[in-house]
Amino acid sequence: MMKKVLLISLFIWFSGLSQLFATNPIPSYNVLVTGRANFQEKIKPISGNSLTDEKRQMNIQTSTSSPTAGFSRSIIVVKVYRLDGSALKGPYYLICGQSLSVAIDDKTWGVDVVSEETSRESVWTSSDLTVN
Image (cartoon, rainbow, N blue to C red; front, side):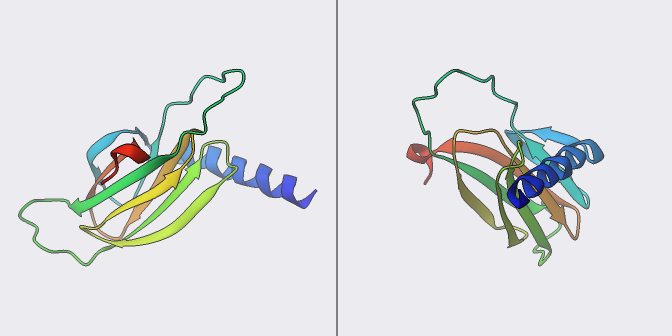
């Protein structure tokens, strides 16, 4: 019972999150983030029996908002979550300029980014075979 309440609460929270903030598609590259940004994959059509358990990576690359801005020690908080609210990974704390790869499955995922200062974020997925 408690697990159902938690899952419903997470679903409502993530649904509200996507409506409060502009949502960027995944993949997105060099998106200007001031404060908070949300990135989401397109919802995949439900197919009968999925025989594949595709292992993928959610990749997040952070950078300063301007090439001339120099080095920044700004902290960026990243959360990776399933759009259905059934899984949350993070929070991960990055310094501007760092990158992050998080293992995900074949479900539909989103990324929530909170930045102390204006930054540029790139978010994309890759299969395990293409990650360096």
